[in-house]
Image (cartoon, rainbow, N blue to C red; front, side):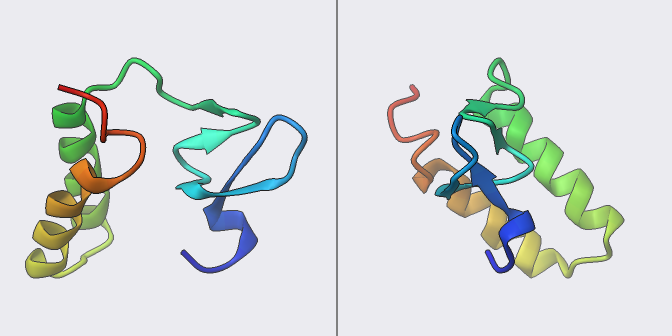
Length: 74
């Protein structure tokens, strides 16, 4: 992620580089109830709308389970 607007924020307003600003704001996930499968679909939809190449979309979706948010999710 590049640029502070793309980086999540902690409760005190400091940057949290583990999470993007779309997913994590003010110390909380913006969609705490979303499942990994739902997140994969959401990412795919957003990237397709932005005309991102399909190989990049596939790579992004494959990487999601490796992120800190999903590591302990079954």
